[in-house]
Length: 174
Image (tube, rainbow, N blue to C red):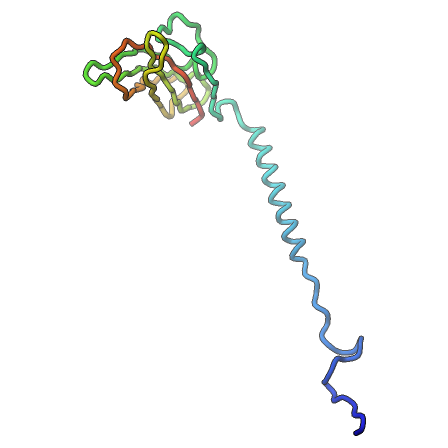
């Protein structure tokens, strides 16, 4: 048998001759990486802008109150409080004779510079200071200087003489 040359087109071409060009390197990784970096930079800029532009009345005003810091029914005996707590006054505190449910009538006056929403939490306590029930009242879109009368209605049946106390006031811009 004799040695035969390979047929043209068969086998691997010698190095540097013929064949398809090597595949082009794609920059998909770079595109994805720079896109993520751009999105991250945009988020950081937006957060900085919101913090720089935000005002005092745009966020809820939450001041934790302890039982010693709560307000009682006699509004005329206490000084006007700062912040949203000073915007709310108890005008009546009673137990309904038919249902035995406690309620507190509240007068909310918006003393801020922006139209605001209010959420007021009230507790009903007996003569010893023991909490018998609690209730929540709310009002929305109260313009600066405007007043709103609302009722915080409890649902527990109470037979004792009660005192109403405001335990928390949240005000935020509408």
